[in-house]
Length: 586
Image (cartoon, rainbow, N blue to C red; front, side):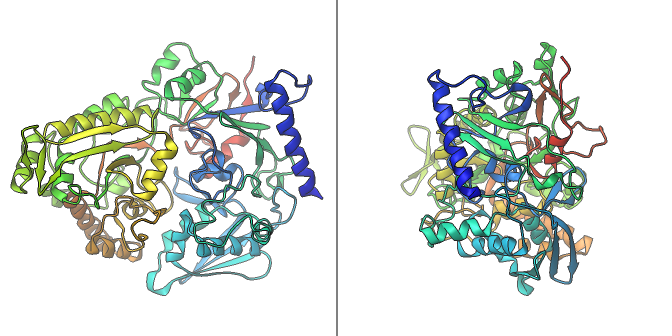
């Protein structure tokens, strides 16, 4: 009966919203278009275009159910904190290791949004879904032999003896969203969800059931709204002891960064996760805008946005062509103009400029594979030696293949758009015709997954308990790539393949000797620089955590002793920030 009641409420919300649009809403009725401002936290930069679903397992659904933002509705067993590199309890209470066995104890107070209790059977069923269907998290079964329940509140993860990876198993318990077993059983029984491997990733699941503090309230092509579940289990004394401050979480979809920036500056948006050029000009102009770090570079580096070469394409299947492009890019211009200086000086390697990652490689051993500045002369020499000859039009060709490519990223992502203009300009210096292509975000995502691109921009790997290994995996690992013509949801979108790189990526997680580990990371970087499956353009913050304090205060900041990371209060341990918010004083 409760599910029926929820459905009725949802239909009423849609009816009331429609009435609002036509000026017929009754006075005092809250709709998605008259949300109480002092109870609503507005985001931008998460959703681009119309939302395409609300299942945490769906493909490119946008909004609050996608990637780490799903903690609002779909919680994980544990949550990762990039500030200290630790995992903290969420719906799981604790985890322990015994050899290759990981045991998780669940919080016994957890309930789904429909009021039913979470049990170990739900966790097991969700992991089994990723085994049965092809979804983004299916890759965890590369390292898992089994996931089983011991009673109602204990889950046992058994690692594969031949492919044990402790960090990937810990990544799984901090990244895999847990949903309701009963929900999926009903969808299968009704035929709404099919049994083909691709059916789950294409199932939009607007009514999907999670354990998070918020539930879907409304969506259309311009707006996505979640409402707080006031019966949320997390207010129990075993977890947060209270509810998050905002009653509503809303996201307006803006046509581009400039429109979203202006709404943010005016205080119509509280939490921005989109790139803002020269952010300091906002507070210099009087706006109540703050960044996590009050001084340059304002944001913490977390990912390496890169151009990914489709190594199956004629021309780009030659490593010389790929490296020549990397050698002539103006990284300083990208960092200064496209990134407003929110980045350190770019180095030719696959590592972030953080002490922990730099300590993993032998810098002197990499020098012979690197280049200095914009090396047009060196790049032209490589292409000449490889037999790529300039035609009368100035474009190089060989064997009937011209070096003419499109470089792609979504329209409106201004920092990425500006970066790719630099890439296109650089190509002309070495006899390549590189043109920019800026489609809608959904088209870009489909092109990336299906391999229907020449050169595409993306951020391989992210932050998590397994970084930087996860970055190397996303850039270079090929053992589990699906057949050509099949959507690729596991990374390495350029379908690069190198047997030695695969072997090193397999070996790193099981290596505890520091010297051996350094040798492996150094060799992997040598392969990367020699063959360039992709080329990092900059060091970008994992998330652009920027806030406007006109309506809400108490946002996390560096040094505030809350230990809440700059992950826009919707990702990993950043969700804790929602409990610290307070209304701004008028």
